Image 1: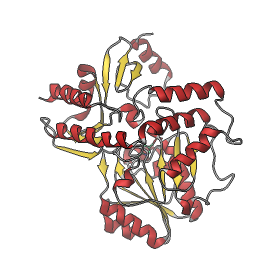
Image 2: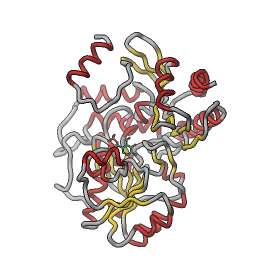
Image 3: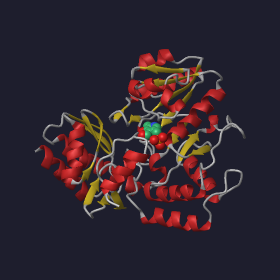
Length: 383
Ligand code: PLP
């Protein structure tokens, strides 16, 4: 079936919620992708920070294959070893409490919002400008972006948006606040790290009022910034975090991880999902964690990120570069057109987060040569 046929099928049968590029990918390995005509692409998007271990990492493929042949699904009415082992691993590698599994990032945030509301009934959820927490109703209500929210009103009540300002945040949090929900590095709106000052103010406000501080690490977690979790670089420890995207090494799985103080809020019957924490996705996540949660790999993320950042700073036309580790963005004029040309002319996969920002989220296993290669392809368009 040709790309043209696929486009016809989409036109006739698929709800048009995505603006796709005219490329069909059929194979991936490490940082490389191949289209239906056998052309090779360098992937600096990693499925939007999902395939951090690289495409089809043999350890992840092996774990999926082995688990799929043994047992694919039984529901959460029964035990399976991968889910219990993954919960232990996530808890030990972060906040030390308990884990609720989901199938996606938005669902992990739904669980976090429900937990916070159950703990402080009727309490507000405080979020900051430019946040993105997902597109289901609770997560969307925490995503203060007019274009995403307005067509779908009414939203879930009880969300308050504050500027990214320590004083404003402190003033907004009170006894009626259930949670402050923050991305330590805002991803979808252009890779904007929140300042340590703001994160400290959030921590202090939550300590003062008993509200829960929840970090959305769906994009920034799993080694993306050079530590397993971005919060480790901020000096601020949240009461809970949410993860997804890279967690499953390419399989759909998310998680709400609590610290000890929030570990007993949810009880049987409070929340659930048929597929969540299924054995295949959990086995894949354990394998992905084996790849990522190693000092050498995390140190590599810092080094490769610094190399990419430096190269971007020297690129003609780049106004500003920001981010952490391999979660980077460059401000450039007409970013969507540049991303399209990068894909179609240079076979470099990138993403624009808006009219003036290109986002770089390569697999964490990207080599120095591949970083230089990507910079070279970009230079060919900008130089
Ligand atoms: N939170 C953050 C920070 C994200 O970057 C995303 C996705 O981009 C989400 C939540 C939503 O995740 P999902 O698309 O898996 O629902």
